[in-house]
Image (cartoon, rainbow over all chains, first blue to last red; front, side, top):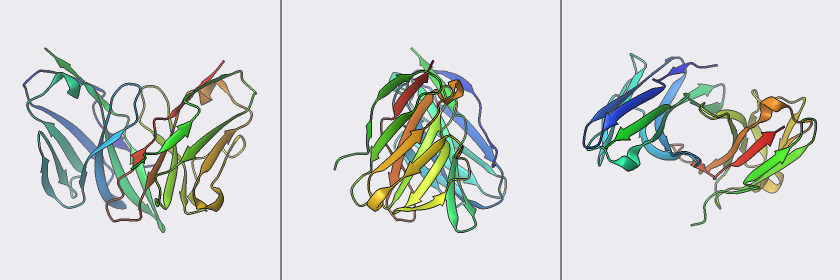
Length: 112
Length: 114
C-alpha cells in the first residue's frame, strides 16, 4: 500500500496559526485532499491540490509539492471549533482505478 | 440535497455473529465506497463501486466480508462471521463522476464486537 505520514497530535492556542504536514510516496500520485473530522462525525472535505502551489480558502490553505511528495494544511486565526482530526488523503492511480488512501490523521487541540 | 444515508448508526454483536450495513448514496453519484475506520486511525478503503461494478476490492477480507450494489444505487456491506478486530466505524461515501473526486461521507455505522 501507499504510505502517508502525518503527525499524530498537535496543540495550538486560539487565534494562532498552525501547519499540519503530510508526506507521501510520489509513485502514481493523482491528487491530494485534506478532510476535517470532528469526534464521532464523518470526514468533511476541506481542500484539493493536484498542481504545485498554494490553494487558499478562507482561514484554511493547502500547499503541495509533487516532486517532494509533501503537502501542508495551514489553519489561521484558530478557533475552538477547529479542534478535530485532520486527514491527509492521496489519490493514486492503480491500473484503471483511482484509489483514495487516507493517512492516520492529526488530532489538533485548540486551547483557549 | 439529501446526503449519504447509512443504517444502522450503532450495532453491538457477539463474535461469530453476522451483521449488515446499508448505504444510500447521494442521488446521481456513480461511485460508492465503503471504508473501515478503527479508532484513532484514518479510514481504510474496503471496496469501491462504479455504478454496480466493483472497481477495487483488494483490501476487502473476502473470507468474511461481502458487499453488493444492486441496480447501481443502494449498497449493503455484510460481515459473517464477525471477529473482535472488526470493531470499527463503517463509513459509506459517494462521489459524482467529476475530476476532483471529492468524497461525500455518511455518518457511519459504529460496530462493536464483543
